[in-house]
Image (spheres, rainbow, N blue to C red):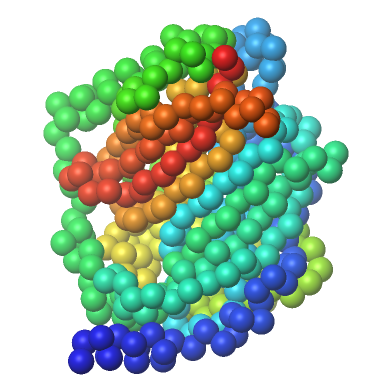
Length: 393
């Protein structure tokens, strides 16, 4: 009987409007202004990534690369954190959470003066039963990033978890997480000491790369600790994306199903008010992302308190890998699955292991395979990922 009830619930979720968007090129939010040094510095600041390669002129001025953006900056130059193409088609009363990101990086680095352009479309979707919200849509959307020279920089395949908000509220999966954890002065001092120790691991490398020959299967990456997270840190992450600046971006012509995707009224976009005050639809003060920084609106969609951005989790992972690899490293591919969000008051810990190494004769690349895990202070897994990193021999 339980199986029959589940099947009926899945069938009752009307996804017919999603079908017409699959494979359809979508309008994109196009940045008006090229990337600046300040954009890159603001991004690494928001990601809590004090690697001098990305903000210190005295340091990057001595590098053969000069100032380049971290690979995680790619998502900052996009629309909706890369989730926009995955949110197409109307399903009433739904909201979305990030379910994962898969990245392919093609080689060109992002530098000051670059102006990225994007092509986006819905790739596919499926419906499955989840403990969090019952019948749930897992939709995947692709964003291809190219620079002003027409060079392909990266492709991102984002998974959006679209669910009925009322059902998530009823199930109250995170009911035990409504109160923020409290931290003693001694605990906070310990967290800070671990953070500073991590920063020392890439500071000590200077401009030297990590060489492929020096890496061995089973090697552990240094632990990385972030947090405690807060409304302030989440707001900083949102505002570090250039497209969130008033007037900095515009939508190209075309049709999209994102704005009429079935959002709850408090999370929808009011075009008339937006014309008078852009804050009415900026995604932080108002709009689809307001639950990140508002307990009231977080609970409207089944979250216990303010929660972090899935794209930031991807950024933390990409930075973690790039910092480990050093100045000559290049993440070729990363595939991350997000299982639980960062909540206000939480601490996030990252760990990684070298799963293997290989030489790819066809491309003449020396590659290292990594397995990565992200957890909170209780040990709950927040994300898992694999990454392929090219290192100099």
